[in-house]
Length: 223
Image (cartoon, rainbow, N blue to C red; front, side):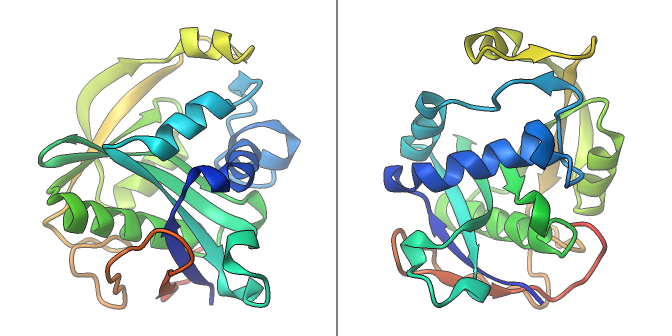
């Protein structure tokens, strides 16, 4: 049973967050997990400027998670096991992205905990009643996983950010990349999500060393 501690990232956390994101999406290490994009896109996922902009965004937050398995290590020095970004895109709508779980820790329920925590954060802090995200259209296994978390396609498609890839010296490895837009009504409880789900209790999130502990209460094969 994984037990996670959550906090809001600050600029000081950049050295921890950046390698986690890169390891989950790019390179050989990412292939240890099932969320890799290494066969779709080469190069970096995000650079220092882009990640720091997300961390410091006034209308958003990067949420990071550590494991109490590392309790002997000071909280600010513990290796991260997961992160995500949430953005208040409108008064009632939040955006979920930059979702990364360490490839070596995938498959143990961490992803479900992170999503539930992010949803609760957006409801509590911003009063959001809807969460939106984009997923690469060809990633059927991810679309199905989010479907089990209560997300559904809106029918909207968005272009892939090829110009941003070029700035990162990255390039697509396949043709036809695009995003499907998914959304979820945060007022409705779903399996593995929030909205009053039994076993998930997330009190007020704090920045810095004070952290929230959330116990993993399920054991599905993937997050």
